Image (cartoon, rainbow over all chains, first blue to last red):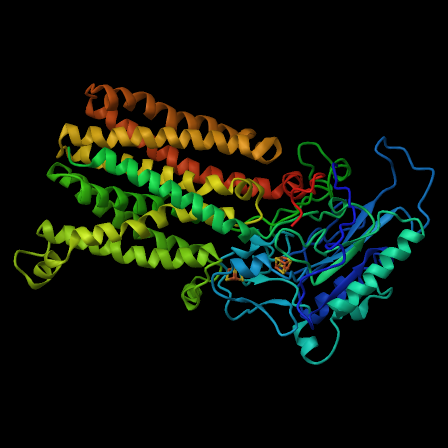
Length: 290
Length: 343
Ligand code: SF4
Ligand code: SF4
């Protein structure tokens, strides 16, 4: 896999465009033990139905992906062999050679899903989180390919017993719990504090400290995913739910430098308008009175 | 689920999850593909024809002479006829069709789908009005009735002129709509998508109008030749834009357009049947003045239309495939060493 080499960028690393008072998650993957308590807590609190039952063969990951009915997904990356298929003889100072990460909606500072939505169903809440209003969404599905992280999805059912409601769903950052002053269910359930909830500015300070500590311990690849340097790039301006990773983002199935899709709207419109003018001239020249 | 889950026993092309794991996260897509079904490419095809035939009719009306009256007439009717199924298709595709009017509760400049909905509404008014005027001119509302007199008194040239803006918009915005997503094939080619959709809409509308006029046999040879000339130019541009799209995509992102069934549809259907053959048949007639048998003209027009429909299908389906391919997304979002994507 050709991956991205992460380097610190002054002015971008560790900064986000999050508004003051914004809340979010810091998911520190170095603390994750892959227990999936977050997945279960999320399903229970939000009353989400179970997924298709079976074995994926993706290591211990039988969840597969985020979906309309799965809002936390623990990824399992086994690094038990080098590229030649041999077992490595030296190991890193911390953890094992497992990488585990609890993925979630990033609650982007500038969210592609929200900008795409033609009904205004997706809103930014008073907590600076991104939430789909279920009484407004009409299931047009445009938000789905507009999310650079493959988070939001329509609930189309499981094709058998369960009929979906055909609307868009994703993590609400437990909007109902936040309203009552509680932390989100996944953060509450996480036994190792791999998932931490709080003000984005506080969490970012904590993340920078943690990355510095990890690097001091010899984990040089440790970095933040979700600041303006990595993950929150291209007009996204940072992620309110961000991560500490110890390998290139691609290893975790995350885009290293995604872009806000709507950045293309204006240049694409301009080129279309120019083409329209050219075609109009062509049509006039061909059809005019001679 | 946005993608089909592949369990361990269901290997793709003989590759197990372990094989996939070396290059990506077990081959799981990084982004979710659009959940659209057959309605959307069908709408792209029909909506394009509706917009572009209004363009042809309007330009023939405003700039053309009396000889172009049959073109104006065919274009006006065709525009409305192709437009009528469009909202039905769009509503059918919704997860919750009964909530279609939620599209009309906001206007969001940054959302091409929102702008597109409103553009379609405005264009609908123009298309309907022009078709009604044509009907009045054709005496379908009787002679001297109130409706007929009212319609005939409207400034039809001014309407045709103003209508050019929404008409061009409807023909091309769908390309912008696809470009403003995270789908590698669509967003990598963001500058080409709109022009390509415009070109395809125009060539399809020209083919459809030529078809109607040839079958009806009520137009001058010269007028038909003018249409065909313009059509060959548009198709030439379309072929160039398609070539540019391929080059600009790069190997990984363009992969779905070459491989397997989609690759065959692209080569045989879109390039061969839709562009190559009609160009070969029409160009000598259009530019050297050789008169073609009616059957051949009809056939060329039909092939162009088939090619247009296949093109919409191809670009949507190949987009889905590129969304499903983790390597395509990584290709798009990998950090550049020289820092070109750093803002
Ligand atoms: S991660 Fe995707 S679904 Fe979540 S806020 Fe960002 S664009 Fe929307
Ligand atoms: S599916 Fe719902 S939330 Fe998504 S863009 Fe359409 S209306 Fe908005």
